[in-house]
Length: 134
Image 1 (cartoon, rainbow, N blue to C red):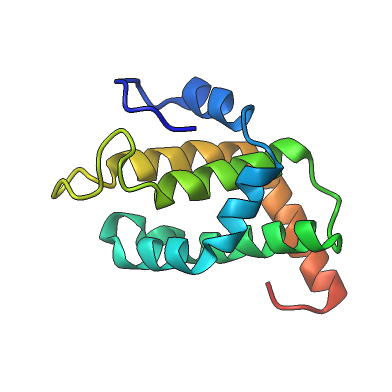
Image 2 (cartoon, rainbow, N blue to C red):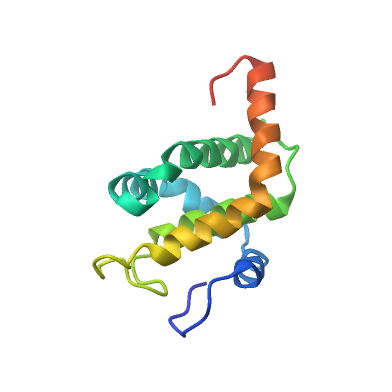
């Protein structure tokens, strides 16, 4: 899914990559929840996404369980892509490069959020109606 060729991370890049996500990628993102969560929490540049990551994983898990289906596939794919991109240590800017290693992760999360923001709000509203904590 990820290539090392030089590409600008922009909305078009994210949209093209999200379109290639399949059920196996969604499964992989879900199975790596702890590792992805730890990476977000431990990377200063990504800490602002800690709570958002929890909501994204919640939606992904509820979708996979069949509990929450009122979400377009593109949103599920955008969540899986964003989370898997963060997990990948050798993406466009390898994470071990001090100072800039997480810039591309931050960009992918930011652009992906544009595609899923409305659906995340709907999901949180649904959780509140169900009386559950997101």
